Amino acid sequence: MKRACVAFWRGGDSALPGYRLALVVTLLWTGLFIALPLCALIIRPWQDGVGPVLAELHDTRMFAALWTSFFSAAVAALLNVPIGLFLAWMLVRGNLPGQRIADALIDLPFALPTAVSGITLATLYSPQGWLGYPLAKMGVSVAYTQWGIIIALMFVGLPFVVRTVEPVLKALPHEQEEAARLLGAKPWQVITRVVLAPLLPPLITGFGLAFARGVGEYGSVIFIAGNQPFKSEIAPLLIVVRLQEFDYDGATAIALVLLVISLAALAGIGVLRHRFSAWGAMP
Image (cartoon, rainbow, N blue to C red; front, top):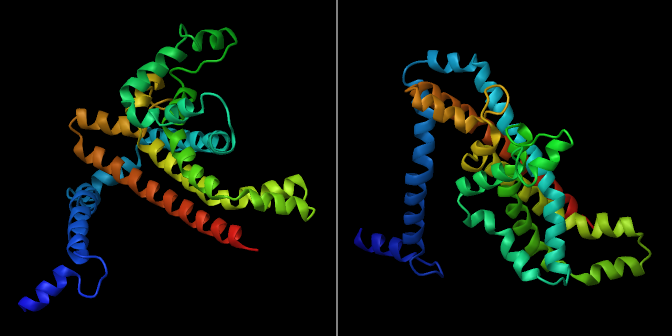
């Protein structure tokens, strides 16, 4: 028994020393900080019966908040795809002055507190702000509307697209494009079959990461959204409102619905990425 335990901790025939010990620690850590909270979130709404969950399913305010969150996150992530591709292309293939500064600024949303970015965006796009004032003169309102939510989510989600596409673009050899041109490929064929084909999986991955971040984003959104029910109220904010009202059943029910829809959306994105990976690998 003792020898079996020692062999298990040492990893047996594994080339990595301490492999099984690291595996156990990783699984334990993942279970405590990921699996256990998710299980608690799934079980908690049903502890008081089916009634509270069914009551929340008839809450039109909840569905309006969910629609605002998912629609804004999807639009922001979709808009970030071409912008992120262009920025990644400039960083990898371009040779522009100040390129290192631009490369560092892309990671700014990762380091900047979300409340700071939210206040900054609300100040810029307010009717008296540097960007909001000329837009207001043209009859365009950004702050305290759904467009403000989309802009905030684009700000926090753009680095995910750029950093996902950048390493794949670096590994893409120039010789493939030159060979395609020498073989008589037209410019649009070079772009679609040689350049974009291997970039589609990372683009979809970047979209999924930006979308997932946008669905759960809170700090950078609430300052510019206006937080008007049925108009610009996001689901994470509604959860906080329910908690402030001591409606724990309602808050957990909303969180459960948000979790189920998010997992389904991410699963669909994963299937789409797998199919485009297979398509890009075709000769």
